[in-house]
View (cartoon, rainbow, N blue to C red):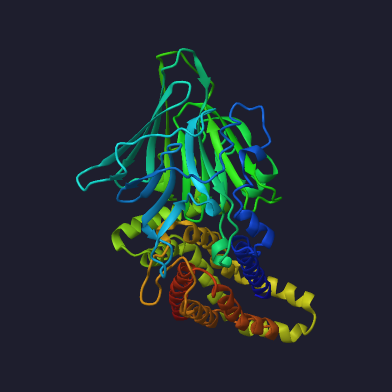
Length: 542
């Protein structure tokens, strides 16, 4: 029994350390922005093309575009997107999501793309060596009507050497992915040679707002043959440029819950690259370009060619990302237990489609997990009940051997062997919960579907902590009640430690998402019910 208790302490200690470690990773300390960095953020001369170290790559001019768009804008409105395209360059430079608010207190829509210099974040497409093309559109405002399924925006422009460019953006109802096509026609007298490109230009804006604003990954990502989802953090791109030929890849810029991504047509080998503009060692407040470049194009006079891609600007929803490109849904980073996390989210989604409440979905999933492990848990509780019956004999052994711990341990192991009791049996329910607990933790903090998802009464957002700490307190009380049903440790020191355990775990859980505490509370209540039934049955048999 003493060995089992010691093992249980060790398991709980591991849970606490792992929780704290995970929390520290997700909530890193935020450093104040220095005066020098602030001044750098407002200086538009810091990232001029002249400051760029010229390279020999054919896309050197493409990378020289970290400046705020200043041309005329046209507006696009669909049921899920409000966007603006800058006619100088023909790029989508502004995008907000009307269906997602900044917070429960701030109902302004989430903005992903931003043309402002201090928070520069835009998408770009074009051909090398031809910056500054001014495009023309038929309208200043495009809006998806109620009876329409798609909205097509067409831009036309021409380079100085006679290359006519026709850009087409196709927006669809209910979709955040935009089909983009760029058609090139050579009206010149000589063969044109160049490359087409798509890229995302973004400033690494210093994070402010405390832990909640800085807990998740902000940065770039690319898909390679060897690494389907490879993070390219701002500090990585500041340290060295990325340069690699990749078949069937994609690029993305991520923030918590939301993403922008360029996905080329399938079965293409393109050159993927990154560039950084600034002097910061870790990339803070610098401007970064992440993109891909087509193979060299050769366009004879009167000839035409096209370059098609998909641009996604919206929430990280698996059902939206998975069909666009292989491994794009991995940007929803569920951590090292992602197979369990994906299964839990799938199961919760199915239940949510019937219940319409993510909190009750968590409760239902918890009960289903308890049912799945009912047999194993039942054996553990039977073992605990039988161990409880042995308490008088264990007390007698302790009195007989006194302070001789070695003899006491040997005598107890012999007693367990004769009674055919597994001293670790009671620890199994706790060990089973560990991987499920951490998998659910990442589901709650990474799934945009659970963002601002209400439960009941005072719980208005399952992805953040309980504002009144009611769930953590109830969870601690449930742990205390569960202890009362379990055999008490014969050692007084261990008994005191066990009495402190619910309080310690309550303190741990105070800052964790309400949905996670709800899972643990439901699991404890289900365990208490099952353990009470097992104890009653065992008492009747005895």
